[in-house]
Length: 112
Image (cartoon, rainbow, N blue to C red; front, side, top):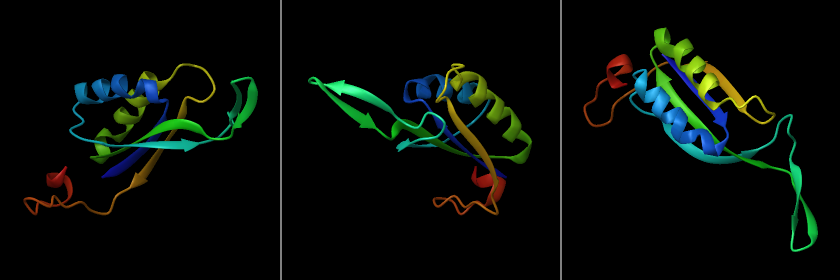
């Protein structure tokens, strides 16, 4: 099993969710986050004063899938979340040792 962690632009969330559902992803966890990378923040003007915004709002997706499906999930996120502009986000792929469905006690692949 693989854990896919993706940080994407918030306005792309629904489009990415729909694309992942269409390829068979059955669940994900979503968290609103703030961060910076190459974009490293920006400045905004509010009521005539300029403010530095050091952290940019993003949405973090956490998805656990079977290893055979991981690359397809990553490619779907990349193509759907991408705008071609700086700040599109990052995707990470990690190994998962095990999973357990609390309600039924199912483990590993059956728990997904």
